Image 1 (spheres, rainbow, N blue to C red):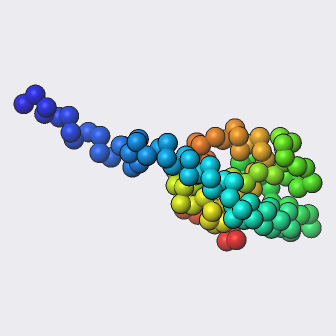
Image 2 (image 1 turned 90 degrees about the vertical axis):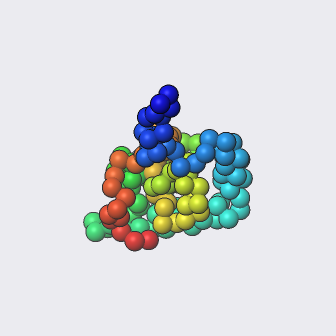
Image 3 (image 1 turned 60 degrees about the horizontal axis):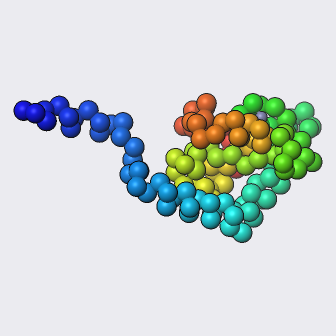
Length: 130
Ligand SMILES: [Zn+2]
């Protein structure tokens, strides 16, 4: 009788990742972030974004967070330089970190501002296929 009700209200909102694994995971994510593979994918993605042609003849994938144009000539650490963002955050699903389908173009500042919050769009309806 004492424990009644304690076990039936947490299941659906409980985090899927046990807290104990978080430290290990962020270490792995850090390693991935600096891996040659990730750098290559990011370079390729940036190049593809900068080549993207719009109907009006202009080029360049806009920032998916603020919809503003990205100047692909700008370089890190410029706040408006291109930054690779992840639709499903790395924190949410590290397995998608190297998945180009999950890559999004963003301003460095917008990406930082977003942090690891959920994206403000419906991921069920991607606007285009890479
Ligand atoms: Zn932006």
